[in-house]
Structures are given as structure tokens and as C-alpha cells.
Length: 73
Image (cartoon, rainbow, N blue to C red; front, side, top):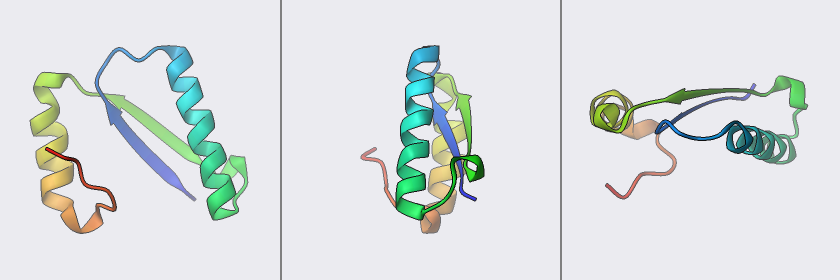
């Protein structure tokens, strides 16, 4: 605990991914008082033309009760 699944458009660099994972891990550990080894993070690139189907419909519109931050679209 905790586990985070990040979906994003393709094209992020390895440096960006590393920085994101390190920053999120540090924030989680500080906020939730857990060890780095307890954090798991998955990253999945989703093509822009598939975003609506694979992310918006599947994970946002059908699970609004789980969202703690909603997108502006």
C-alpha cells in the first residue's frame, strides 16, 4: 500500500518517468507515512485517439464515485 496507476499519452522520456515516480513516491511516503518499498506505481501509455474509449469512458465516466480530482473535459 499504496498503489497508483498512471495513464498518459505516449512520448514521455525515461528521465520524466523517473522524476515522476520519485516525486510521487516521496509525496506518498511523506503524506501516508509509509516506506518507499510499500509503494507501487504502474505507468501505461495510451494513444490520444484511444484516450476517450480506454480512459475517459472506462475509468472516469463509469467510476465518478472514486474520483478525488475530476478533469476539466
